[in-house]
Amino acid sequence: MEYDIAIIGGGPAGIMAAIASGKTSNVILLEKNSSLGKKLLLTGGGRCNITNNKPPKQLLSFYDKKNFLKHSFFAFTNEDLYSLFDFDFIEEDNNRIFPESEKSIDVLNGLKKHLDNVEIRLNYEVTEINDSFTINNEIKAKKVIIATGGVTYPQTGCSIDNFSLVREPLTKIKYGLSPLITKEDLSKIAGITLNNVECSYKKSKVMGNVLVSHVGLTGPGIIDLSSMISKKIDYDISQNDGNLSCEINIDLIPDISREDLKKKFDEDFQIKGKTQIKNYLKNFLTNNFIEYFLNRVDIVQDTQLSRINKKSKNRLIENLKRFTFEIVDFNRNLAKVTIGGIDTKNINPKTMESKITPNLYFAGEILDLDGPTGGYNLKIAFSTGYLSGISANANNNSA
Image (cartoon, rainbow, N blue to C red; front, side, top):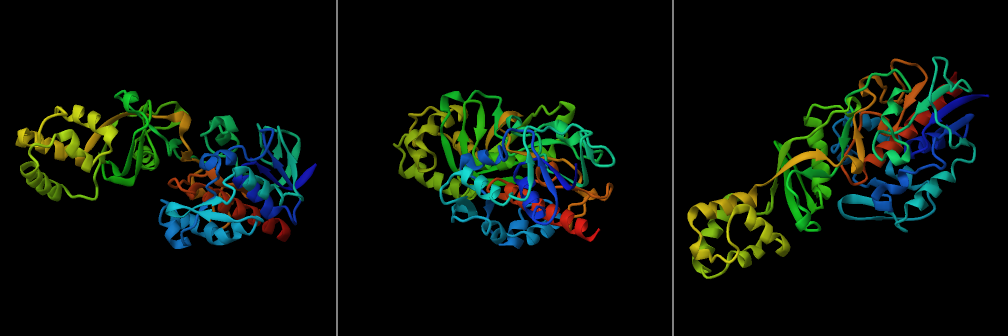
């Protein structure tokens, strides 16, 4: 059977493309899993951080390729997204948006209500698309939208093989928004949270909480920093490389400058000379991190302030402002997004159509587009999915 539009991939981008095109075109949505939206259900810890509610221009400033994304973001706004649902949303810190129920299944079910005019074929893995847009030597389409996602969360069907369905130029494929594995075993302090610290790698800096895990570091600050690290390091997971070796630094008290901290130390070490350093550091660090910190800087916990020499005092200041961890790898199984993909230089940002292959469109994570944590990546999926759908549909109706 021949269809006007075939959409490959039933994640948020593919679903939105089907919603945008399915009302007036003959559309088939192909998904290799037994159900739609498996990755969508995992987002936001199962709560579905559906988007970020910053104003469009401010929102775009958080993306490397804001000029490419602006067309889709203005074509499909957050207000357009909210209007698809018959329930309310709540806004949390940093403009993160969640369904009021805090259940991702409600978002998925709300989207599926708009697919009545779309033929959905589940458990259907696309392995071949020929030049005439015949899929698996069976399904013929006038236009094809590829929304197969990236490589993260392989249990949802994402795979490096998704990029080989078409002969479009790719940028290097990398891990994004990933926890980091440290060289040092941190299992004895696992569960500790460092609140409102500044994480840095070379000139890249991120403010946020850091959580110590059994194998390394995670939390919003680390997750966002990992993407910055990934973009600076030359590797490509499609070539089975990607061993990581670098140092990151954490400013444990970013609200106090190094100069002010030195002045405070000079004053306090005289006035509070009998205070033990482990108790004094409670002014700066969470209690359960202090023992580990002092061991790292080689100062005995019970040492009184008056007995700490200048060299040791400078070492304390240096480590409070620049505490270093050696990183050996990304925690690949927990990476949230894919960096890299279909090169956007060959995609028309006003339509999501390939500049190389007419009538072939792309949407979502398969494109070389990514953002920080906090609803930014679902925003890409929904907006590029919608734009690809209406563009394919408009071109079809005008053909």
